[in-house]
Image (cartoon, rainbow, N blue to C red; front, side, top):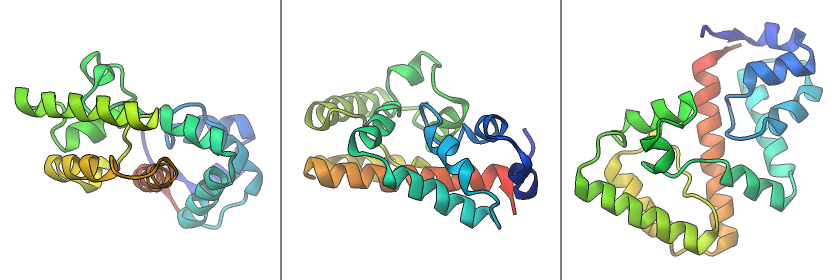
Length: 171
């Protein structure tokens, strides 16, 4: 799909806008849908800030549901080819689709431990990481409090959203 111009996005009705930008966040497109009301956007950076502000203003339960919409890294969805196209590209960009047996076992163990502790999947902007740094962050973040980990996951979701927007939207 080609790049979307901010001027074109500003002209869309809410449904078309939501469809055009639904890829930015995993799960239901409520963030994009609610952010439409803030049009017109001057540029990509303003669009991003509105989207992230909408995410941060959501009730805690809705934020946790957003985190839960993300797939495990190198998990069952990846094995079953059931990731969103964006997640598949992102995970493969750091080789999570080409793990050794030992690496796969480590990711499986960390995914399980993390979900048991927090009740949602580990979220990280893999495009800004390496396999080694992802594993380091997994271990480090397992020591977080649940509140701190929700905040960390939302920061990572914001980073993912920026990269996805930057790939597809022009000012």
